[in-house]
Image (cartoon, rainbow, N blue to C red; front, side, top):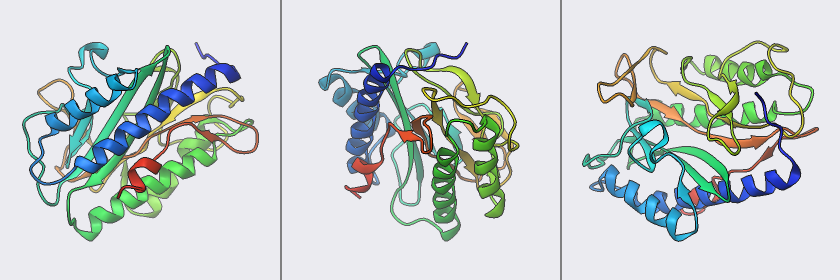
Length: 255
């Protein structure tokens, strides 16, 4: 069932996503060689709670942490651990917050120090594809238009789209209908209406699109061991131009 949001509900969602954005900004200051991913997780949890929110992922379907921290060949759902970041790592941080009964959700992929040009390009293309998908989240378009725009940008730049992991609706529940694939055909799928709120989150691999689930039961990993990137915004379908509720400004102003 799809829940279209009122303007008041969208305001609550914007507040939740603002806290997510600020949390990722705090995390971005700490990403450096030598810090453990579990330490990043604790910093995020403390910041969220200190600002009146609850970690949206902690305990969700049994997930044990506040952040999903996915390293290098991990695509998504990496569990924070004692692993210490090192020069050249690629680090996706996905954060969810529950505030005033509504969820916020956003993700950003960071680099630790210098990375190879092909990895830099992977991150650039994935982030660009996110915004190309957002541009299609307007009333009268279809879900397939979002996926088509994302997929086209990946294929034009010789990276692969993860098929099994998709975006989703969001509101009073972290995951709501509809699913939002990162591939598709123009004019296909659900016709978009104003008030639909979705998390759009392209996941691109430097190598092949194939993935598998790690033995921990959570982390999704590239089958060929090559790096992956993940960027995510929470977006409201509007007439003429989508409204982005999340933000990268607290990350990019710092870095």
